[in-house]
Length: 190
Image 1 (tube, rainbow, N blue to C red):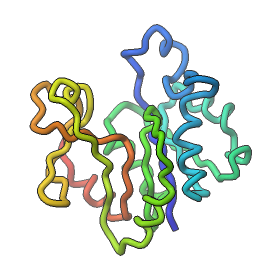
Image 2: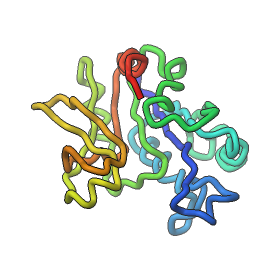
Image 3: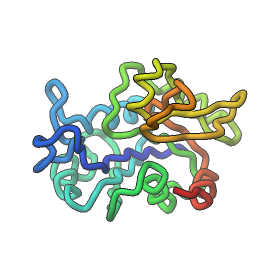
Image 4: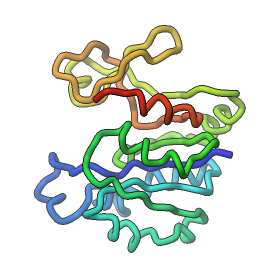
């Protein structure tokens, strides 16, 4: 089984003053809240159990908007990230929810045009490991995103918003992991 995790924390500081009273993931993108986009991608991929990780300040807003998930045909669970600690720390909060299953993780403020269903199906056939979706950008663009160094098919280094990028391969905010990711997270040093 594969479970979904949407990371919807963060302060949205670059979107102030809009995010002074509203979580950035709840702001409209075209005609619906941004959080609908990753949620719909997971629904299209057949994922039925989804965890939303968000900060304490806006958790109630997410619950009021999305409820149990029944409007989307899914079961939603919520987890509170008490303070900002980055992507790995937020994902670590999903360990109990994911259990021994695999998970598809989407950063809640990223919008993907492509359907992810085939990627998720292929990942389920994979015995173990992870898939991280990367895009090659210019050096200037890479400073604005998280970058990854790759050796063959293995990601060896990740850095968020580097001043001097060691790579132009940026992670897109779409990840697929087996449950071993939580052991790796526990060994990470900020």
